[in-house]
Amino acid sequence: MREILLISVRGEDRPGVTSSLTRILAEHDATVLDIGQAVIHEGLNLGMMVEVPATDHSSALLKELLFCAHELDMKIKFTPISEQQYAHWVEQQGKERYIITILGLRLTARHIAGVSSVLAAHGLNIDIIHRLSGRIPLEPGKKVPYACVEMSVRGTPPDGTALRQAFLLLSHEQGIDIAFQKDDLYRRNRRVIAFDMDSTLIQTEVIDELAEAAGKRAAVSAITEAAMRGELDFQQSLRKRLSLLKGLDAGTLAGIAERLPLTDGVEHLFQTLKTLGYKTAIISGGFTYFGEFLQKKLGVDYVFANELEIVDGKLTGNVVGEIVDGPKKAACLRAIAEQEHISLQQVIAVGDGANDLPMLREAGLGIAFQAKPLVKQSAEQSLSSVGLDGILYLLGLRDRDTGRAM
Image 1 (tube, rainbow, N blue to C red):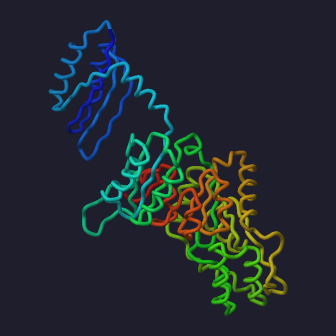
Image 2 (tube, rainbow, N blue to C red; image 1 turned 60 degrees about the horizontal axis):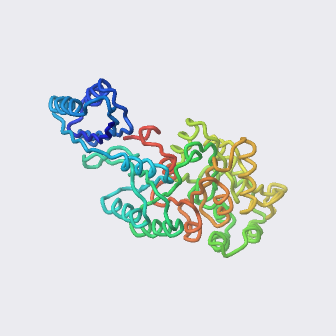
Image 3 (cartoon, rainbow, N blue to C red; image 1 turned 90 degrees about the vertical axis):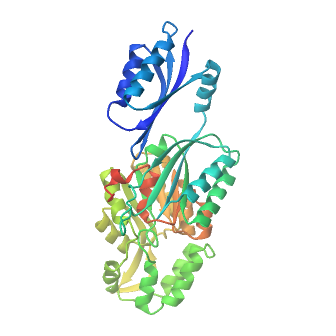
């Protein structure tokens, strides 16, 4: 009768451990049903589930494995698995899987405990945990920019909305970001990332900078904030703000563009995305002049924004053509996906305001970045504790993959 064994090996990591043990298994014609290995610092943990054929005597196999482990100074443990237990284990593998990404400037045991407790409370089991950020140095003054851990979990939450709300509350209480994504084909095959511009790619609202130049900053800022909170219709608020800028010299635009402060992590993010072959887009309720300036600076592929009307070198207080509001942003996102011949599930959208929600919902992955509470609660994912290049962790990339200093 065939036997199924779970073999657990642990000890100091060194070359040749896996090859030595599997060579013995091969000599006994064993089938490896599952295998996993992890190394933390210098400690090796290796697990194998194997099927020993009925024609072989497992006692001889176990004796050889024990002798080999002794020679390697490793501890080895054997656990018999019944066919019923194995069948149940296989059945569990068919459950849905999700990826949990935990990131912040620093991660502690308290953060991991909080996330794992939420997962347990919602019936999800952790299979694998990886660290995506660089190794943490102990020398004074040295540190990694961000800390990030990724968990692969199994199961079906009874209430997905309640789970997301629990993560949102934990994120707020502990000052970390927690992303919860379904682990499917699309997650590993995103091709386009579209960004809002103002307060997303740049750390300001351009219209406020224009208002400063026109001496109308306070009045325009009040309207901007109300619009970002979703309290005003975007088209009406834009027209109202622009009317205050009538007569502004168009020559001021160049100076404002040169002074635009990029959001932390933007250049690293775009360099990495370009290396990986992603297409990028700016879809903004702001203005084409500044979107095209960033397009040249960052190598952006698509720009959709509002064109300021200029007559005789002065702003008229109007825009040319259709206003890019929330619904128009979603339409632009669909147009890019069609142009690139991809599914919307392969598109990521990033924004911070209420008018970004339609495109965040349209995309396969919608990320609210440094967003207002209304937007954060409505978006699928949110980032607030790190720079914009924290998005790379949501793609499953490690620091060593992206060239970030370790």
